[in-house]
Length: 144
Image (cartoon, rainbow, N blue to C red):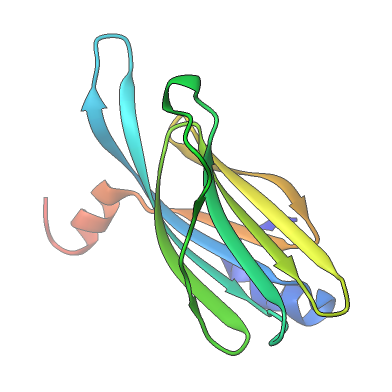
């Protein structure tokens, strides 16, 4: 289920499901004649985790010329929360899987494409995605 970032605390109380909050910025990496290459800088937090549960995060690629094996993403784990920073390129995805000791299983995939990060295959997780616009961030900080 995809929601707005300010709605997650209400749903957490109602459902008890894990919550993934992603903030990301899309940055132009390289310009080519026919297309541009983008880098997605992603800050990801997972909350409402079961303390003894298993959390797995990894990135995979779908482009044939850049196909690489899945890369495990390291994260900092607190009691019921985890946080990480990861960089993706176009056509790569972030996979998040959560397994509780009693066998409950949740997952969500986030696909980077056309300067957007899109939630795919979300099962049992509350998901909030927020794009950070670098131009508006610079203007808010008094830079132009």
